[in-house]
Length: 125
Figure 1 (cartoon, one colour):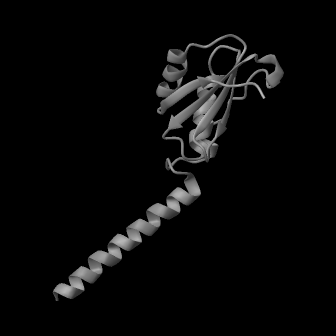
Figure 2 (tube, one colour):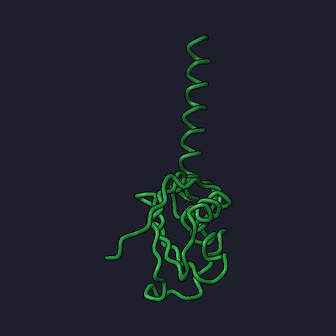
């Protein structure tokens, strides 16, 4: 009898785990669909118009939904910011028309629900 109860509990745990994993596969790691987060494009997408560049390591960015939220956080600011995300490396490249203080960058990322691990001025390629 005890073995039967244990088997039922294990089967229920496996079913719950598989359902949760399938949800993540279809909806992203955050459990929200990328389509639910409308992408806000930068008003000016020509990178040559942005003389200031920053590389930012972001904690908590794991999927396309996260990337869209972070890009939107920067593009939703006053005109003059262009953000590109690199999900596999959990990085954001921010280009700006005017210098941006590190504290402001960290604040924008925090308001989006993530944490900036480090911020550095990017070297021109």
